[in-house]
Structure formats: structure tokens, C-alpha cells
Amino acid sequence: MPRPARRALIGCLLSAALAVTGGTALAQGKTVKILVGFPAGGGTDAIARTLADKLKDELGATVIVENKPGAGGQLAAQTLKTAPADGSTFFISHDHTISILPLVSKQPGFDPARDFTPVAGFASFVNAFAVSPGTPARSMAEYVAWVKGAGQGKGVVGVPAPASTPEFMVKVLAEHHRLDLVSAPYRGSAPMMGDMLGNQIAAGVGSVPDFIDNHKGGRIRVVAVGGAARQALLPEVPTLAELGIAGFEDLPYYGFFAPAGTPKAALDAFAAALRKVIQQPEVKARLTALGLAVEFMDAGQLATREKAYAKSWAEIIRKSGFQPQ
Image (cartoon, rainbow, N blue to C red):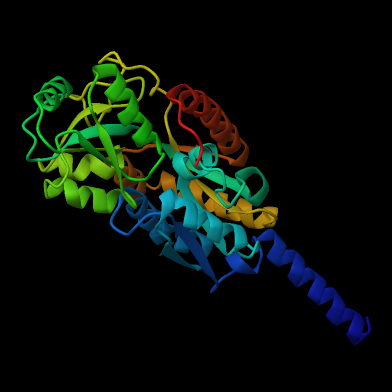
């Protein structure tokens, strides 16, 4: 075979090999970025860093976590939209950014169906209502009685992001118990938790991963959880459904998303690596300890889960009278 033809053949074979392994972005020695839409120190950040530490070995690449906090993950989602579609950038997100933001914002700056492609899901979780250490209540009933007892600031409830599922939970609780509750939106769970621990706010709503460590340490008290059943980590805490408040049984999810147009080989390589990582005993134990129910979902299953969740919450938001802003 003439030398030029041999070189051309070798080039084609190398290109094919890179495609099979997920493209150059997932090849040995390259860097993969995981975007997090919330500040360092929060539940999503802890989950991302747990996974990134193990994904680097499975992918044979440097994996970094980049925090882009703001607007409930909106800034990170907008960053993903403009990122190269080459397998170098992924976005770890729960339900709020992907499913809820497009329902509550007139101009979110991204369209999940058009701008993103689902990669894989890895867990579900529940949201919870917790009281700060200076709040005397030991249960939801005691909290309701305490707030009704009047007192400036008693009805302020922190939420990790505006127009989020936690904020709608506050609205439902206020209506159900006829309380004067006011949501205080934060830029993520970490600053909200700081104010709860400092008794700057009396209560907060967030995910179990946001609260579990401080609850176990006795620094805050979780008094109610979402979901259809009590949580294994919090067997003593009743569900909202047990307390007569329906609508929070559908479980939020965690998943990874990539820019639209990312090569399928790169998506498959990342999904395969994620599947292996969450099956590792130490990783599964850590995620479970954070309050997650670990379950792998392929791209199709994640897409179906996201659409169903968005549909159910569209009805809740409509009934609440909330107008997109």
C-alpha cells in the first residue's frame, strides 16, 4: 500500500477509535467539567464532588467541578447551553433547574428540550421541612402552634431558590394551616443553612441531602418529609401525606445533562462510567447517607422521568395561582 494511502487509513482508524471511546473529550488525559448550579458546601455540590472523584478513574480523564451559583441553577444551565458539544461539559441537576424553572420563568434563557440532551440519572430524593435550633417546636404541629402564637419573624421560611418546589411547599403549608408564612429565597442551600444555624430564620425547606448531616448532629430538626413513605434515614419523621397534606408524593430526581448535539459515543461513555461509579459500595453508601435513593436511569428513562415530573408540577403551579415572572 502506498505511504499516503497508509497514512489516510491510519487516520481513519484513529478517528473511529476515538468515536468508540467517546471522543477526544473523554480520552486519556483530557478534562471533563461538571457544572453545579449551586454554591460549594450545599447538597448538590457534595454529591457532584463525590461522583467526580470516582468518575475520573472510570473516564481516564481529569474531572473538575465548577460551581455556577445563581437563580436556582439558571446560570449553570445557560452556561451549559453555550458549552462546546464535544463531551467536555456536563451539568448535574435536580428537578428544579430542568423541570421547574421553565414553568415559572418567562425567559429562563434555555429550553431543556431544544438545548440539552439527557445523559443519565442516578438518584431520587425527597424535600423536607426543618426548623432552626432556636425554634422550640419538635414537630410540625408544634411549629404551626408556635407560628400562630404570633411574633415577628416566626413565619419566615428559607428556600434554596425562588419559585422552587420548596417555595411552593411553603405556599401549600400556609394555605393548609392558615398561617402567615413568608418565603425567603436564597442562592442555594448552603447560605440558607448558615442562616438557619444562626437562627436568622426560624425554618427552611430543602432536600434531605441539604439537611441530613445537621439533623443527625442535632443542630436542626427535620419535622416533615415529602414522598409516599417515610425515609429510612429519618424513620421518626412523618411524611406530609401523613399530616394531611397531599401533592408531594412524586419524588424529585438527580441526573446529568449535556449540550444538545453532543456525540452519542461521548454520552454513552459518560453514562457507562456513571453506572459503574454509583455501584461502588463506598459511593453508594455516601450517596445513601446524604439522603438519596440511588437508582440508575439511562437517557431515555431520565427523559421520561423529567417530563412526568414537569407535567405534575405544572398542575400544582397552576392551582397555586403563581404567574411566570
